[in-house]
Length: 304
Image (cartoon, rainbow, N blue to C red; front, top):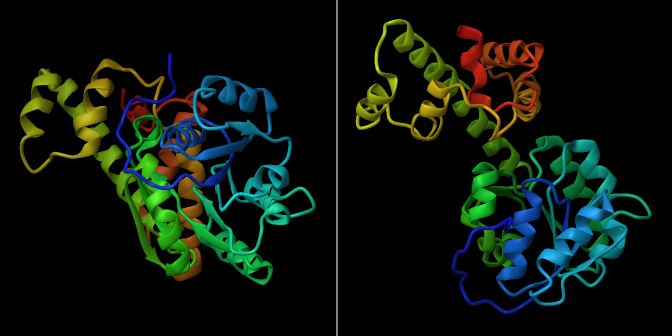
């Protein structure tokens, strides 16, 4: 079974690019770049995953894998990345084996990790003396969005560098938008996660209430989804909440990581986020129930 779903790509000149990190998001994102006609070299900490990727996409233009980020980045005009957190990002960019050491002046590093705005600004600053550009570009849309090549990408960084990478990044995106200077992409992703946290908790409470009231909740969701209560969460997670299905989607552990970044940034800039802080604690309850890898919609488990 393919890790990507078919889509059409805008015609664009083939570039040498690299992709660092072949997790549930990076693997299909790198695949869309290859399927769009680019020459892709991949790096993954577990090398067997990189070898498997090259085997799956052997029919594309010269897929390669490299044992270090530095070697993967050599000769690439754009280096894409999607890893776990701030420290993972530093480990693949900095140091003797980091991507920055292998990139040529003028190349652009595009980071799709959901990380802190602080590390984005740090790496933007580290790249410039080397003649490199750094774009922070976290994504929204989850694993399905990555597989379908329909992610929403929020970018921060210099406008000229953004203009170079945007047509290439559209291979896996429905929208690829510059939000401002370095760090603005990560800050926009934080706004996204604040919105999601409140919506999922509200949906969980609504479904739990309706079930206790004896309503046919699938019918209820069909009806209210045509009115002001409609949301992506209701359309895509409401019925799986009713069915008690949570073994898919965006994991609770990942959401807690993201909300931790949000709350840290709120502490720095003086924002008050009482509901977000409360929902973060609710996700902690789900973790204590053993739901670390359950989808974020598993908040309803607390209400049973």
